[in-house]
Image 1 (tube, one colour):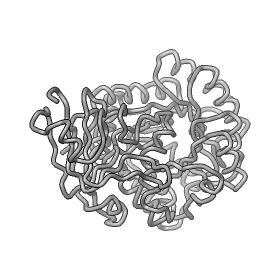
Image 2 (cartoon, helix red, strand yellow):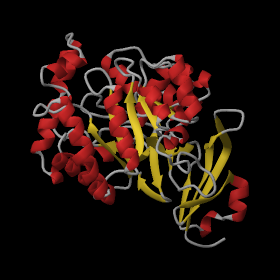
Image 3 (cartoon, rainbow, N blue to C red):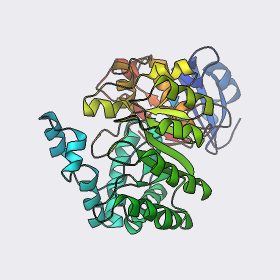
Length: 406
């Protein structure tokens, strides 16, 4: 066959995606053909090369002694912000906790001040720098939340910066409105919840700036009732629903996510067996954030609580000024070394299941008809992704059939 297509061939292992009886289907000596950004064939190299001779391809990549896996999907980040909070990291190591720092004007509210002072161009450029790092670590699709503006003007400014970065960068971005991240100092709680519902949400929706609405439902943030009010109105506006749930205290956020048929419930450090069952029964993706537990020095989420209930969890980086790793490679490594996930489960959680957390079942897998998003690992086995911890094995990244990092 001649034509404009890309062939990646000779891979020691090619991870196709979720398997029938195992977490992943793996093809030895695998190959994949991408045409016009879409995968058209996947199989063993000998058969693929018989039908698609490499010399006829526009781009040919020899992946001998390497591993090909789907592009990593980071379904929970706060990657657009301004300022630096490394001193708070040092304060936590000296004994201060997250809520104490927040009560003293640090944490989220400190970043809010920096974001309000920053221009849209500065926010865009900061995000582009972060996206370069994410791409180098294999992320091909990334969700980005607002939530450090806490006013209509600043929340929309953040989301416009996300849209501008999306137009300039190879990584595909999914924008989430998180006006209900904290209560700003200039308003009381009731006034601010009304402001999110009456002013911020309509402005975001009218401008087409977000796909999802998220709420931080937790101790020191928003109650279950406040979260429900906001999410129900967001649903009426046609936004998908996400929720930060049960991170520091169990307030019923997971049950709320199940009741509202949210796409995902994230964090879940304090979730119970009944929470896990409610999420599984409702088809809500439990998204676990091992980097957050690692950063805060707290116990990791119990992923088996969710698998026992019948769910396949997703994992995400939660990259933000308080959890400062943009690497999904690191996230996979923490999921195995910290949470005890099996390597194949962790890789599935960072690809196909993370894609489900964004309502994108076409992503995170190498199937015919899926986007041509994949990464090549300079490793003898996919098991080395978490086994060889502390290094980045990503050799090349292909997005929509085009090499975007090498």
